[in-house]
Image 1: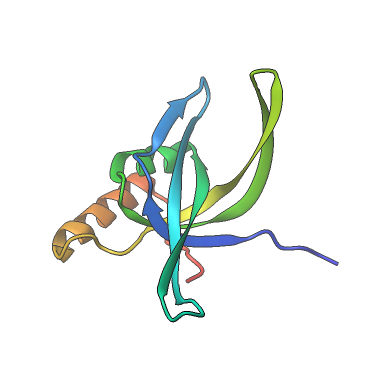
Image 2 (image 1 turned 135 degrees about the vertical axis):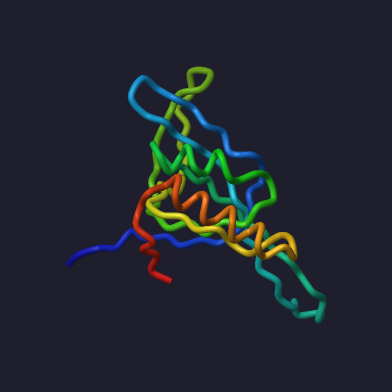
Length: 134
């Protein structure tokens, strides 16, 4: 039996992306918030927010660092990964989405031309296919 590890999220960045460079590659990490609103048993409106750690590599990392800031909306496609690291002598684990593709999310401003121009510039900068499964 085969398995699928696929994640698609649309949310807002919790802080500016952090770009790091190694000798051979670039990596950007950031977190996005996704929210769900519903009515509880008492009829009160409740909003729950989940935070997701996202990582992109190389050219995509550089493009995201260039075009996104805290509060911006992004659509991310990737897979869930878990890695471990040591901090203060204790082994810790982190689950994150290793991004494969991304797209600009909902527009923050009413200026559609500005959003469109930003998206076109990023697409030229990225020089990747426009494939997105949605």
